[in-house]
Amino acid sequence: MSFIKKNILPLIGVLVGALAGFLYWKYVGCNSGTCAITSRPVNSSVYGAVMGGLLFSMFKKDKKKENDISGNH
Image 1 (cartoon, rainbow, N blue to C red):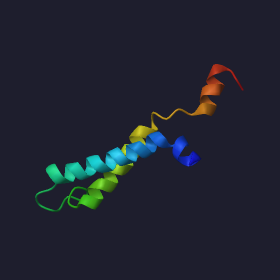
Image 2: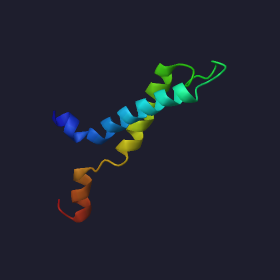
Image 3: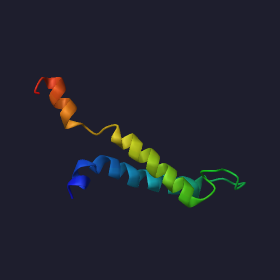
Image 4: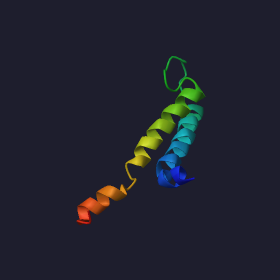
């Protein structure tokens, strides 16, 4: 449970990204079927999940770095 609490923002990003990837496949997709990412819903969802996790993890605050910046070692 502590893993989930520590990483809630990236996990939300993974879920949002997977949903966005699936919706992109469903509504935009690839007409010819030759697109590597958007030709299948699994590929599009996994790519979206990875991108969402990376994007949301940029906003995660690192407590150790906050203490070092404020001068509390």
